[in-house]
Amino acid sequence: MKSLKKAVSLMLCALIVIFSTIAGSAAYTNVTYMSDARFASGYEIINAIDVSTHNGVIDWAKVYADGIHEAIIRVGYRGNTQGGLYLDDKFEANVNGALAAGLKIGVYFYTQAITTAEAEEEAKFVIDAIKGKNISLPIIYDCEYAESGSRYSGRLYDAGLSNLTQTLICLSFLNTIKTAGYQPMLYANKYMLNDKLYAGSIDSIYPIWLAEYKTTPTYTGKYEMWQYTSTGKVNGINGNVDMNFRYVKSEEVKKIEISALKTEITVGETLQASATTNAAAISAIGTAGAVEWTTSAPGVAWIDTTGLITALSAGTAEITASVKVTPAQGAAQTFTDKLVITVKAAQSTDPTTPTDPTTPTDPTTPTDPTTPTDPTTPTDPTTPTDPDPENPYMEIDPDGGFLMTAFSVITNIIIWCINVFGKLMSIIMK
Image (cartoon, rainbow, N blue to C red):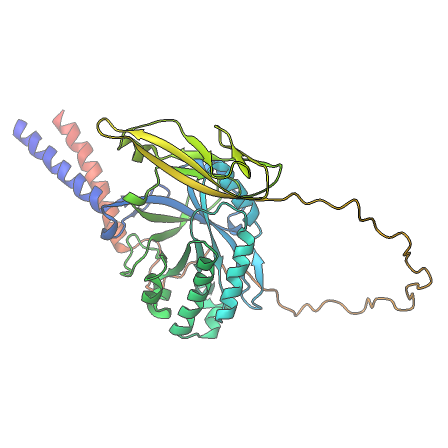
């Protein structure tokens, strides 16, 4: 009987090890997902969401408490018919709410550009919109066709661009973002990457965010982030939300990170910065001391021991948070993170330059009451609106199939059988 118990125990352990190795469970869905084997070791996998006005009002404190510490927020989009540029209705609220709750954020722009000039225009639109905001994750160019029902449609799709033209459009946006000092990234699904872009010409320069709604990705090119479903469930968000895995090399995982609501303040203002230490990464090294704050320009931006920044004069200052980690043996290591703060001079009107009271308006020039507005000229109801191209309710999978694949079904059935078998055997062995 003892030998039987031992054999069963060994078999159960082997099965659990095998399936825990190949199956990566996503905490925010009821489906088991598996990352590509290239990320099996040497990487930390971070859960992240991406949101837009379509997700409604978000309680970011609940999102953070639910274990989501990174978010990609839509900054805007190009209209699907007329091609206008629009700021996402909830961009400011989402940025301020996410930063206040302690999340790291990046932004994405949903393009419908059909020329390189339009792509550069979109990049400048984004740069203006994020100026002064604490964006620590990439600025992402969302390159995909708009969808209508179960088919592709819209301005970009109808243009029928060649792979070369589409690639040059993407590079135009990404290059402009990089020149402005930000980290660019391209978002696209497997279909776009394989059939509509020269992906190798992009991923050799910039990271890729892959969208592929399968339980394990089949795209063989390079990518550093994977959007695996649009039906995730996260506390603080009503309805579904896009879920992602972001892959970070273990040696690149920060041990300490600074967060603040913004990076631009005015003389006389204060700004509270905070520093979060990565407990798991630090505990593997040793014991952490207290966080210490310093500033490169105390005459521009002073910072106290609590992380409160006071703007004193116009200029820039580099704020540094550091933590010393002491191992059980060997020398202590100090880890740091930095945040550049721009301080602007306070705006004031010049009281010594009054308006000239000797130059009155001319009362002899009345408005002409005989020229009324024409109430018989209504607005033209046939003028179409410029719709938002992003459809959060329907995601086309060009490879066929949607969220669940046959493989995912089989994997989940096997894992369920293992759990049931384990419970039965524990009863039998008693």
